[in-house]
Image (tube, rainbow, N blue to C red; front, side):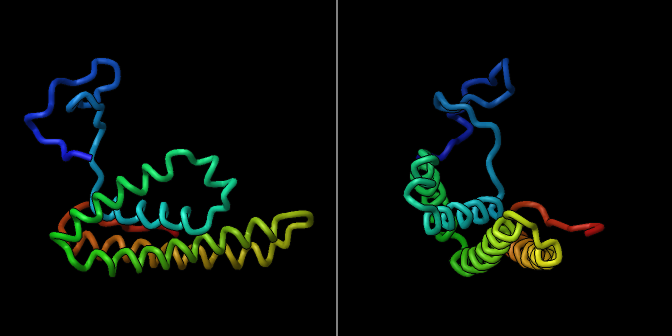
Length: 151
C-alpha cells in the first residue's frame, strides 16, 4: 500500500468531503495508538476466530496486511512498538475473554452477580488498555491522550 503524499491529492469529493488521492478516497489517517490498538484487535480475531467466523469476515486478511505494513513502518522509527503491541494484545485479549464469559453467563438464566463482576473487571482491563495507548502518545507525540472521566 503506497503512502499518500500531498502531491497525490487531486481534489475533494463533493458528496462526502473525502480527499481524493491517487484515485482513492481518504477520510483521515489514524494516530499511532489507534493503528496499534486496531492491529492487536485484528490479530486477536485471526488467532481466536473459528474458520466459520473468519469466513464471515472476508476483509480480515486485507485488514491485517494493511496494519502489518503500517507496523513495519512504525517499527523503523519506534523500535519499542513490539512492547506496545504486547501490552495492548494482553489488555484487549483480557477484555475479549471477559466479554466471552459475560455472553456465557447471560445464556438461559443470567447470573447477574457474576456478570457484574466481569463488567468491573472489563473496566479494569480497559484502564490498562487506555494506559498503554497513552504511553504511545507520550513516547511518540502522535495521537491524543485518553482521559476517562466519571467511570
